[in-house]
Image (tube, rainbow, N blue to C red; front, side, top):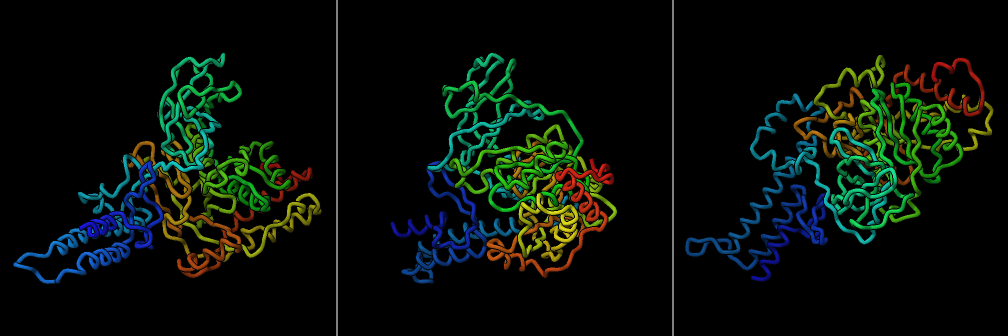
Length: 515
């Protein structure tokens, strides 16, 4: 009996050794004990065979006295449970492949009418079929490190951004201070949610705010954070992943900014940790011109965040969202090696967004196509040491958008896709999709853009990433030559030249139109 109980437990909470194909995410308790793991249908079938073999290996396959053996009955029950999980997994997979304009799709509407469709959706008003992030207390979790604070008019609350990893759903206390730096209100207990965000109720006479892990932790005057309130604007910004490391970023950064400016973007929020002198010169130039707001973040190598996957990246996403609320109509969160490309040569991306916009669309999700770069970008010294004619030729011939035009077939939806969002519609943003809408799934929907209309053009270097992922990318279909529309590409080249001229203090009359 003890052995059979052990096997049944394995059926509900399968070990990794049995379920090798289990999906990567799982739910666990705060004590770190394993919880329910979602698997694909093949894994469920394989596990069911193992369980039934162990439960019935000592039983005859026939009935005894007109009754089924106890082991067979239990096996049937386990099979039924695993089959249910398998069906749910298949349905999740079906939804992941739903068409881009699913709001008008007949099959999707029929699926939503099924009585069990809501069971498969995540908690509360999370986006459909998104795993609910659960806090797991790790030994290397950082202490709370508040960095910025914003007033969120949508919920009439103060959102404090904390630069701390692995603290989702951890307890936090909002601390309120007046203009004399005196704490005038009892600490408010809350939790870290969404990731890197602590939401605090507003208070009269508040001038500064801070977040601590306990209600009575001491707070120094220099630690207190003022609250940012941004005016409304209809401009369209881009936010980049943090720039850092020894890689030469300046040429990609130049293309990133000037291509999207040619497509209608007017403002950029660029997160910077450390970089070469050419990248820094570009950032300073864009900052002086009012094109970009450069946010300098602490070096992750100086604290525990260095060991957390996408730590600064995820922080940047939530911070960009809060900086954009009530300030920008649209916001895009992508990396500097990505371009959001439109296939229609007569429109800019901003034109397309305005034509497609509907009140119920909270985000536009773009499928990814990879352009494999076969060489590294120019070294930083080219920006300072080359003659201006050589710089112009460098842009005309070496810009990745011009040089690398062989693209992969589009990846499936939600596979490394990127989004343009309406900031007021989003409460929790992930790297590749919206995790939670501010008004619930009934208020907003995601528009899944067809690759024939627009897509993300991802310029990946054929280094370690290419060795590991090239086979998967190739499985999406054949590579093909895909040129960018000539009008936007020509403007990108012209803008790029003018920016380099300005950095080198060379006056070019034709460049006045771009600033």
